[in-house]
Length: 202
Image (cartoon, rainbow, N blue to C red; front, side, top):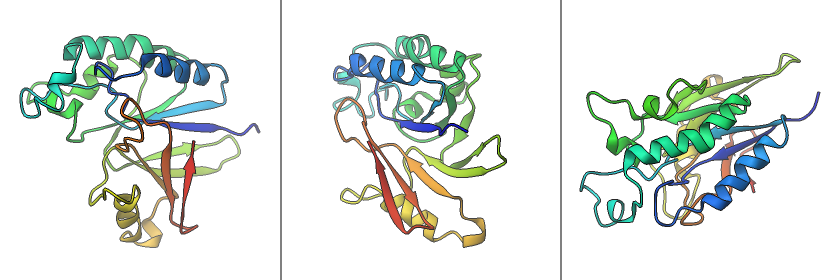
């Protein structure tokens, strides 16, 4: 069986004045180039709109209004990847850029995916990957895990995982919200509790 490569994408902030759509296109095309490459979207795919709550840091940087951000994200990235069967899931229900758009009448994450075959994973929920040989890998997926740190990128994930009893603990944990670059995260951090170390994948 051919190995699978799973890429975790977060913090593209499409619609922001610093979003690098050329690099985003390159990542999309790389994923589409090989059917063994899959992707998890770990949040903040669009810049969103805070309605003035964060007008200096967020709203002032948005080049597109929120509706156009959603349409562009769906058309340019979600649709081609979902139609090729490459998206394992997308984290939802967290308080951040898309979350600021949510109100009592709108689930912004459902609105973002529309009728595309993309599974929503509640922030901190489990993604179960089943392979043809019967093996299962359970991964906890976050956008922003609780009790994070400005200095230790996996502090929040580590605290949650190590406070979970071993019998209930998943195989690993991934998270977004790590702004390695202002326009997108180019690597992600996976905490593997049974190995007691962090694996950094570029």
